[in-house]
Length: 116
Image 1 (tube, rainbow, N blue to C red):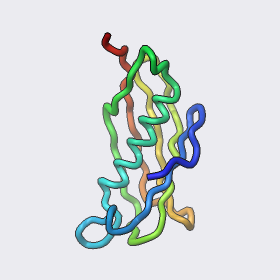
Image 2 (tube, rainbow, N blue to C red; image 1 turned 60 degrees about the vertical axis):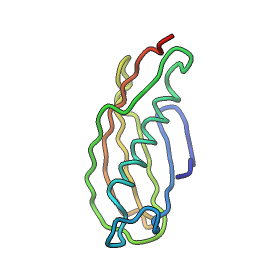
Image 3 (tube, helix red, strand yellow; image 1 turned 90 degrees about the vertical axis):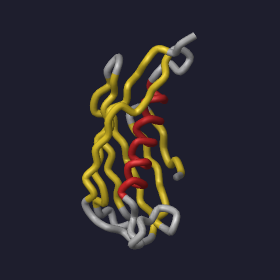
């Protein structure tokens, strides 16, 4: 996974589709898509909080796997849709090089005070 953009309320990341991210039949593994989505949402939340006093953790994630992919690159674009005091909700679209939707995900990230 590589970061392309990290800004307020938005994260863009890419991930290769190859033997490292395939399921046994040679297609992009849904778990790899979910890992990409949650990473983007978690990093986006970390960017928005005070990391000296707060920490964040993935709380819930869902994913609809729309289209199969065998090779190439996918790009996740995560947008904050709720920026609360204790939770943030992100929508993540994962698209291929032709802008075809591969996966649509929503991730809730918990924001908690750091323990001393």
